[in-house]
Image 1 (cartoon, helix red, strand yellow):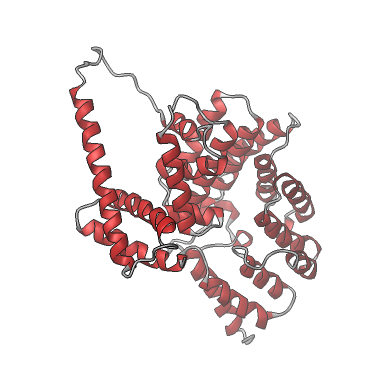
Image 2: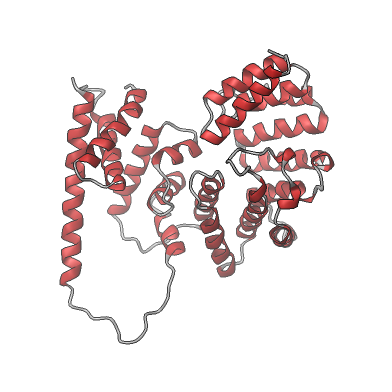
Length: 381
């Protein structure tokens, strides 16, 4: 089955449903359901008109959902129960929704995907990018999760580890600047930290605060990205850094190391350096070693290779990078950076331009394009 065809057709089908009266979120959900149906049906019975097939099935899914929603609202309106007199109690159930979406009947990956979509407000494409899988695959995973939870009672909350993973991904998406969810993720993590005594909850909160403290310096007024080494550290929020470090130190003292504490330790070392040249890269590499041991995550190993390049020289960093899959997101950008530091500007310029073409967002693409142009302007190209 041609997944690239599905990705190409998806925006057009969503647009057609929108013109027929479906709001964007409902249209996107209906198209997700149609994509899952396509994955099931097309291999054995491919349609002559894929776009027309998707429009028809998606519209049918939308109508079914709309009728179901209307019937639900009618049942609720018929319930003859009046609220107690007096002021309503203020409540925020968002964190509880995170736990309920992380239902024990779901696998952790499916629970995270469903929660990001249903509660976190992320699109299927953003979730797919976070998990390094095709969008159609993630749409199918989310639809299966919806079907699973529709058949069970939502009275069993999920585990803390799954909720932490969701909050981490929501924060990362907000921190990228595509959707401003970072502050909401911090708020919910503060609530969780206040409710339970858990070293990794504290580690995640510390990590969020340390990263959020650098946010004012990450972009220029025109939106251009500013690399960490070039940021004006006077713009960093020292109060948030101090709070993050204090929370991290208390968590580490409990000797129950987890991946979020290790990430926070790396962020704290960056925050502790008064200038980029004073960064303790040797200790950062050691923390990346711990993080790789805890997670076996290829993206962690990619970041470790760059840190090795800073600590032991560009050639050492390139050697570490060579052990990884070149298809990893941002692999080409990391290689470009290390090639430039190794004294190979021609290759670096070519790789920066190549990385720009596959950048996950506009700001990153523009940054990488400028890097290639800078090297070419200096005579490397």
